[in-house]
Structure formats: structure tokens, C-alpha cells
Length: 110
Length: 122
Image 1: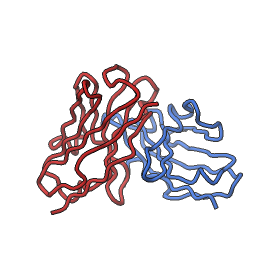
Image 2: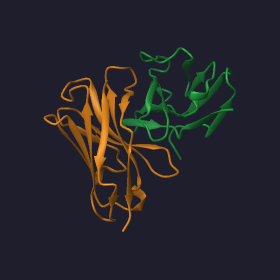
Image 3: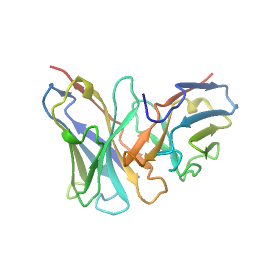
């Protein structure tokens, strides 16, 4: 019952490209930038993408973000075993006047 | 390198007040351009924003929790704190502190703590 909708799981084999979706509404993803986080359980989540498609310094170009309408996507190319983690999306919500989050997608590298 | 670390009691009794502190290292907390947040993940649910404060002390809360939440900041200790009153089992969660950026478009969280599990039980 998260405000933003993500698939609970995704998978791929090493070297493949996988895409994770994030869907919201006009109050959040439709009007505000989306950010993405990589989270290994028990550790601090890490900012991967902000402003829909911007990578902070140090984040590999294999991670690519995009947004269209009320949906956003995170694509990971050249999948590696240590990409296996939870991926979360977030966006500012104008109605809440605060951030809202997706439920997270658990990525498995087969 | 900025680091955030949550600390506080891992167990709270129903109806009591949950208190957590986030200690920030690597950057001063008393600068503009950032907002200092608390976020939680309850079992089986997604992340929920609790509230945030600026270094000035101005705070903003999720309406669903506003009546029970207070977030304060101590710039002398480079810390900010969460107080959640009248807790119930539904407040059992992993509580994260995070730094939000007003500088980056979309106000993302550029640094997070690793989270602190708080269980509400008698």
C-alpha cells in the first residue's frame, strides 16, 4: 500500500539489462522529479538517481533513470552479481508536502 | 564523507514515547540547503515519511502522525531527534534518519543512516 507502485521483484542474468518501474500520480511523479535508491538490507540506502535521470558522483553509468508522465523507470545494464539489492523510488508529493516512496523492488541476479 | 547514525531504545511499551537520535558526522548540520528527516518502514509496508526539520528548528510532519510527532535539532551536538508519543504495535518499524537536499532538484535524500529497529511491545 505504498503511494508509489513498484513491482515487488525483478531478475536478470549477469550482463543483461533490467528495468524497474515506478508509478505514481499527478501529485508526485507526474509533477516532481523522481529519485532512486539502492538498498542492501541492514545498511544505509544509497542515492543512485535524482532529478529523474541524474547520477551523483561515483554512480556508474550502467544505472539510467527516466521519467514519462506519471511513471519513472530505472534501468540497470551490464548486470552484476553485486547489483542484487532492493531498489526504491521516491518523489515529492504536493498534496502531502513531503516525500512519498515506492514499496521497493528486490532485484535478483540469477 | 557524510555519515548518519541512529541511536536510541530498541524497545518501547505501548502508550509510551519512542525517542531516537541521529548523529551526523562529516558535515555540519547548521548549514542551509538541507533538511533533516525521519523515515520508517513498518513490517510488510513501504517507506513512510515521518517528518523533517531545518537547522533553524522549523519542522514539518506527515499529517497522519502530526499529533504524536516532534522532531528537534541540536546544532551544538550535530544531532537531530525524533519523539513519537502514545505508541502502539503499529509503530513497530525500522526508523531511518536521512539528509534531504534542497539543492538538488526533487529534494532527494543524499545520505541515510542504516536504520534502527524499534519494537513496541509490553
